[in-house]
Image 1 (tube, rainbow, N blue to C red):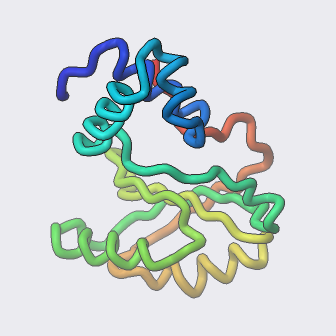
Image 2: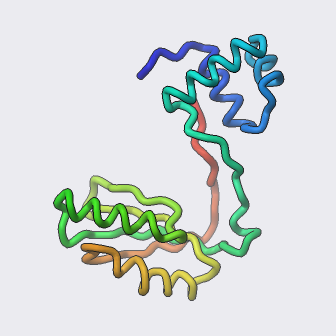
Length: 153
């Protein structure tokens, strides 16, 4: 990890709260003037701490209210098979997240669709046809208790 001081961490925390904050306001909040704040932000971007700026969208308001987590067990876990699976997963827009897991299954997917019928179609036509998928198990979300971007400590 590159050395981050208290000011760098303060900048990251403020940007997590509001990525649209102006540089002038951000500088004021962390106790810097505008130019040093801009220099630090550029450094944090170049080092990969700030990966980009985006808007958090309420997917439910857009009709994508059904969330399911899917455990995927692979028939082959050699590097080439995993790479093929990873590439194919990136092409399915309904898969919001894909994590390789150290467990009795290989991947955990977060899938968002409009409803259970939409999910059944994605599972049957897309997920089950991904390279090297042996088995899947689905867990349907009944209620979102907490669903926000990760926070800094």
